Image (tube, rainbow over all chains, first blue to last red; front, side, top):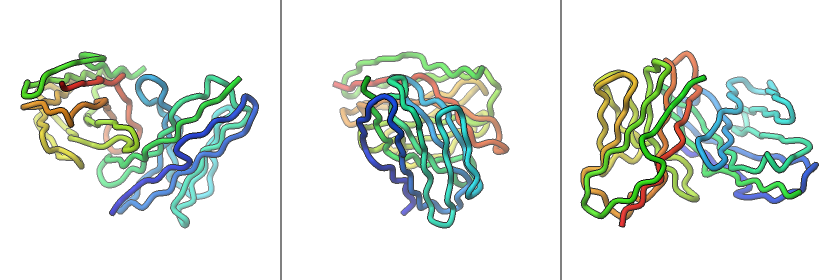
Length: 110
Length: 113
């Protein structure tokens, strides 16, 4: 059965900490791995990864994909309270369809 | 910027009512999607459409139908709402298959009493 599993389910850190969020996938006809940030509204796109070993970076956020071990990580350095959100991982397959994980809820305390 | 709008942010309906959720995108995207989001289950695909009048079932289509009469509008219909359809409903759109990025609407939180 195809699935996307995220860990941990929730995380509490203090401002300035570095966090690593995990996403493992087992998806037939894998096309891509996407990360989204969801606050109290629509998920907003962060990264799309299709190739192993190539890090994508945007400010304090970075992500990498390992297609051999079937996982991806999202790193956030020097966390801020504005990073508090649910982070969603999704695996694209077939014609523009996606399986989503259940999300990691990150709470960054001042 | 891509804009995806949904007709209501919050909706309360009674069991057995027919419910329409509307989604409109302004970027001429071919693909549109309806998901529901429940705690611990993530987003699950209900239906998607890759063109006007074209639709395909997702993972959980039971109890739902959809309509796409115009390219910019994708409607989700609950023929006879039930309490287990209480959820957050998210609409998304995306350009053709050359990119996998989806753009989401703000969501409709539906409560069925």
